[in-house]
Image (cartoon, rainbow, N blue to C red; front, top):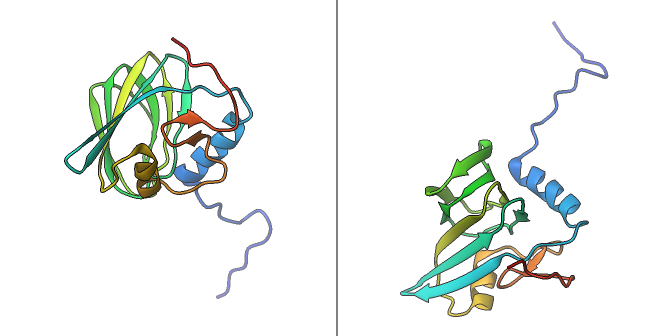
Length: 154
């Protein structure tokens, strides 16, 4: 027996979270950008990136090359994960895999940190070691907004 399917019977492939976040980034990049307050710490082959964002801010990050920890220290965020968007109140720890790109919406003021094992000694070196080069990335090394001057909120 042979079964054939016509138009309308195609099976749609699920859209990956990475593709969803990239689509979101395309739309968000059309709006004025927010530059989150970011601090950088290097110690003993480790790099910690501390990012504070105000409530009602959406930030789309870069694609990461290496696994690392993502810690929501305080506040509540809606964050993209492999299982969809989750609303999480800190403290909460995620493990991020290579290829991860997150969108994080701050429901309240939120402080988040990432922890990376690295060889880099500067923010620029860390960026090159840790994230994929993307032409449409909205931030340059150090979490500075690219291609747009935007005031950082107090």
